[in-house]
Length: 484
Image (cartoon, rainbow, N blue to C red; front, side, top):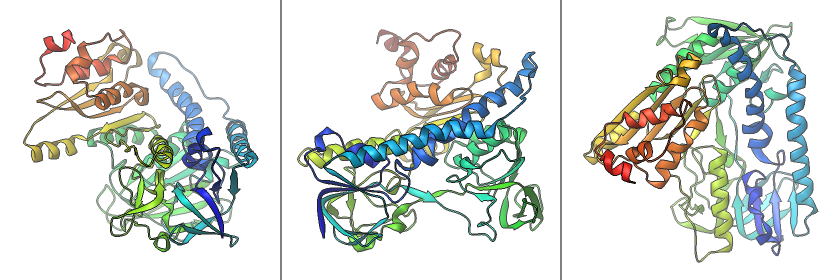
């Protein structure tokens, strides 16, 4: 059995652990997938590189109502694709080569599983062990398991970005952020898009008012079919497929009504699950939540046993143990683990109090903290009250310039303390506009101090945040806020 000081499973955020502080340690880095992990190869980075031209194209189409007529003449899909992956593939190859060049790092490009406490076996049969093991093996796509999903025209987010040509007709299956972003990408670049979702609710983790606005906006852009359960995908023999779905009866179509959509490609965007099923965690004595499939960890990112005790020397980070499945969360947890591996007597805790997220669709969506529904439940349980303000983008000067129709900044605060409980936005640049609100929540700045304790550039779009803050009915004295 080969012994190391540290074994890291996963080359995404797990790879970032290896700083100069680890040069004196014998390290194994194991990944059976593409080096660099999900975000750089099949997730955040390439999708946003597609989103950007799609967003410009979509915005250009909307210029007509502002007195400017333009047309999208030529979308060169292969040029877009090759620009994206020409950069990304080089990063992956270069990252792998760099790690392989280090004397203290051994890279295993194969899958691995636990065979016992702190013992692993690679797919080729080599047995490994270490005093410290970090599990950062991420998540993988899931599919609904319907007939026809193995057809070459059927894709997941892992494969769809590398297709050769822009499809004329696309069916997107799913209602989460991956489905929303790809529906925007393909529609923005000129495809005819149908989105099928089994339930009647898109983006179920987001605030209901924001979802309502996005649903209205999405239905203006592409064919949005809710309450449709996909049943099968059939090869038509001419390069196209037919997606067969059945209405649940909760929407406009009667229960049992069959819908058939012909498409050049189908994107199954029905979610991702932690890759615990590939690790055999039970053999390692590691606890896994039966419902979420997440590895169980404590606040220090130490893996717990099935009965809740700390498994000494085993750590986890990222999608394998995090319900958020967000790169910035994985990076935060990686920094915590990197410290804790070398400083066992002064462990750091992960801070998951205010985890933000964004959906890069059209309009853009961003969120942090409690939804209004969650905040009302929290207030009832704690005997307090909340204040809510929903500020239209179209009611501030820059919103007038855009003739904005859907933008909304919704803030939720504790009425008695003025502390923000949640912030939810839909509209232009929401992923950037929300950042000062994340900062206020993280550092305990009350809404009155935030609104009056600084200048807000006029007539920048950030005034929508200022006005939302000012509109919150809280008990914090404005004069005191100004003094601060």
